Length: 123
Image (cartoon, rainbow, N blue to C red; front, side):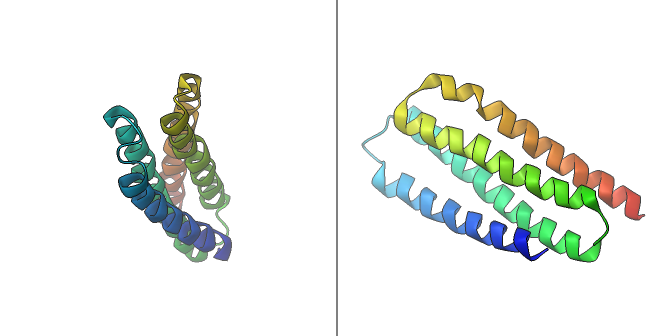
């Protein structure tokens, strides 16, 4: 699906930009703890941007698999919830946002499980 390729590329771009911003723009402005939180958000953001690109290729290979498409949406939602909450938490210090992060993590896990199930169904 072209949409997941575009979403993946946009999110990879954003992960690189946010990583650079964290390394250069936030250094000295955030505590070491919150810089690490930011870095975790960037790391998972990039992993799942690449995951979206994988979903695009799998959707092309297995066009009738709704599991692959659903997996892509879960990865996208996971980026927003997981990485997004970490970006806001690290810059605002609002600790309650940490409660949102696990929801993004669950979305990531479910997305990868759906890819596994889709692959098994293709065997």
